[in-house]
Length: 324
Image (cartoon, helix red, strand yellow):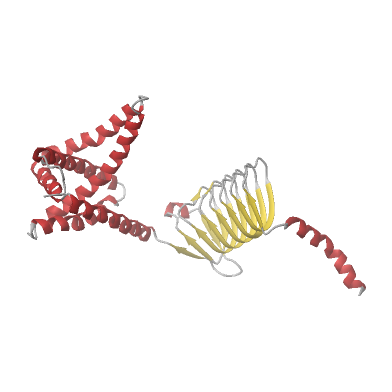
């Protein structure tokens, strides 16, 4: 009985300290801090920048604001979603890093997820059973994998080409949606634009380049004047919409040229052209190092095509453009 009482008295300070450090189920840091933070709770969320180090212990730790210092945490689940200028030292069951870490990292975790938003600038020493990486190959060279409790670390890499293919499918799906809508609303104008681009192919690229560069220059000149600021921003917004539409028109033109070999009806050719040309043109956009050049040429051709379509509309004096 005496030893039980003695054990109780010996553990009493720990009970008091636990009550002191865990007054609530959640600690929310929602004000800017100019000093280091020592946090202990079941759930810890940092929503405002910390000008110092962060020392934390709990079940779930989430860092959603920049930390201008080191991060030392032990928890069941740790998520770093904001930049850390110092080192990070983490012990957790599940760890997720989705932000820039400017210094070294030491991570002991059963599962480590490194998302696309993460940026590595120095060595990462990782003891983990499984590492799921969405980093580019030049970033993964910083990671030094170590076995955890005798288990060899398995790097489950989401391949760069696979992620690129996902982006490609999403981009062509949205592009085809808008292209089919425009083809249904302005069929005659788009057909005239295709014909004019083919007939005036010598001047199309130069004329399109002049239009593509002239509109933003005019918008900037308007922004420099106090009165023209709203007009300038409106022109920039219109220009951005035209840039996307120009790429759609260039893709449709490529499909139009290819579809002519099958010799279907003009109406059917107009509807098939985006479905053929846009996926093919978008492939050229994703070619490393020179994809931007194909995109630039497509934008210039598309701007010229939109001008030809508007010119045809003005000549025919059509008030409702979707009535052919």
